[in-house]
Length: 188
Image (cartoon, rainbow, N blue to C red):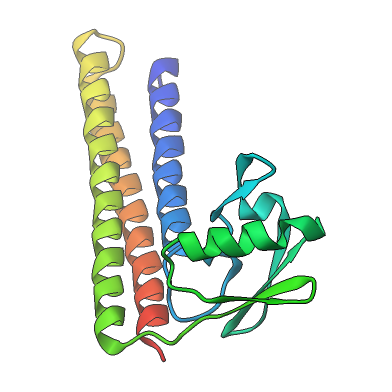
């Protein structure tokens, strides 16, 4: 197999894995009615005149499925963190309790669960489109290598089949990720 072909396959696989990682990250921030640090870790806080993400100035824990506890490393950050959570439009009511902030995650209504599931399905579909675009890009590269005489027609067909197999695997992985998330969202 030509070195250029190997490089092309490695690059496409790396980029497909990156698309999966982006999907996982996006879905980790989706509110499911269950408390997770990911729900608030990216909340922007005005801290000593600069804006920072909450995760950089405090530890975030979930002692149970309905509570998030934020413990700032600097006691002076309590009020800015509380304000940042209020401004975030996440619908949380932070409660300052001595040196920590407690947040009770309210249960989701059935209607809201369906909306969130629909949103996650759309996000998963966008990831599939990204994977298919990468497949098309790989196939174009393979055809160009064949046209330029770098690889034979047989190598081209074999590699196109390999790219399709890779595409199918990543698409199935996306389906699995989405189904797991949907189950999480719809369970009470």
